[in-house]
Amino acid sequence: MAHDQEQLSIVDHLSELRRRLFFTLLVFTVVLVAAFFVVDPIYHYLTINVLSGVQISLNAFSFWDGVGVYMKIAMMVALGITLPFTLFQIWAFVSPGLKPKERKATLKYIPFVFICFLVGVAFGYFVVFPLAMTFTGSLNKGLGLIETYGMADYFKFLTNIVLPISLLFELPVVILFLTHLRILNPLRLRKMRRVAYFALVVVSVMITPADFFSAFLVLIPLILLYEFSVFLSTRVHRRQLAADEERKEKYK
Image (cartoon, rainbow, N blue to C red; front, side, top):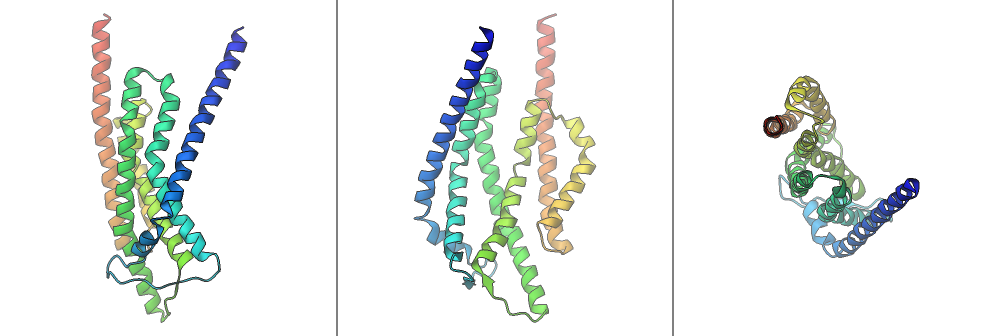
C-alpha cells in the first residue's frame, strides 16, 4: 500500500513537472515570436560602436548568416524576458517541499536574479565589450590588417563576452541562497577568499583581451561582487544564529 502511494506520488510530481515545463515552453514560444518584431532595431543598436557611435559595417559570409543572427537575437531576448517566469515555475515546483518561511524567502530571490542578470548584461556590453573591441582593433591595425567583420563572428564574439559576465553577476544571489540553506557561511567564504580571488583572476583573463589593464578593470567589480556576497552572507548568518538562540531559549 505504501509502495503504491509512493509510486502515485512520483507520478504526481512528474505530471506537475511536465505541466510546468509545458507552460514555460509555451510562454517562451509566444515571447520568441513577439521578439522577431523587435529584432531589427536591436540588431542596428548592437552594431553601433559603443565608444565612437559609428555604425559597424558587417558582412555575410554564408547564406544563413542573417537568419542565424536574427534567430540568436530573438532567442536571447526571449530567454531574458521569460527568465523571471521560468524561475517562478521552478520555485512553484519545489515550494511544496519547503517550510512557509523558506517558501517566502526563496520567492524573494526571483526579482534579484533578473536584476543581477540585467546589470551583468549592461556591464558586459558597455564596459568589457568595448575594451575587447578596442584591443583587437588596435592589434589588427598594428599588424596592417584590413578589418572586415562577419556578422556571425561579430555576434558570437559579443555573446561570448556578455553572457558569461551576466552569469557571473548572479554570484551574490547564489551565495545568499546557499547561506539560507546553511550550505555556506561567512567563515567558509573568508577561508575560500584566496581560492575565490584566484578563480576570479582566471575568469577575468579568459573573458577579456590579453592585456593587463582590461583584465584588471573586469577583475575589480568581480572582487567587489564577491565581497558584497560575503557581506550579505554575514547578515543572513547572524539572523540564523539569533533565531537558533531564540529557539534554544524558548525550549529550555
